[in-house]
Image 1: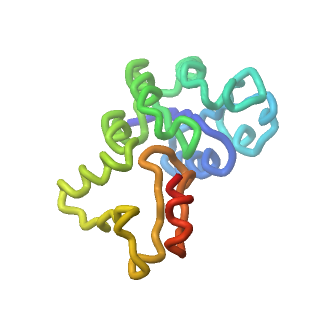
Image 2 (image 1 turned 90 degrees about the horizontal axis):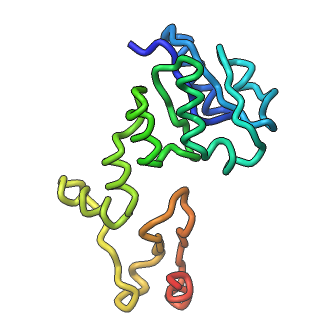
Length: 173
């Protein structure tokens, strides 16, 4: 059983995880940048650990600091929240190597899903119905609207809705 959980994130997602932890009798640990020292997620946690700095690259994106924070606070598990390190297989692996429980998909699953092309191959192999890709040169009016999606990336970046064939090549580029 998990007794103390660190959420490697901030804001509303941390607060939601903390609320569930309270219902389950699990103590909570927040991490925070200097800029977030007075934030609600910090005040609502049972304990908080400062990640020195203001910028996410110096704080919430530093998996090494977050693992150290979890160990220092006596947490036995880490929840990544959303964004930041939530899809970082290396971070998930580091959490496990530190003897902490990782609350999230296994690192291998994250690596497999990192490439949208590979993810579709895996889903197709599992029998999941998928839309067939439409080659740029073969697209016709009946295929519209189309969505152009980069094979890598996240958070919807790189997705383009194409409503006219004349715009297709430009959106792909």
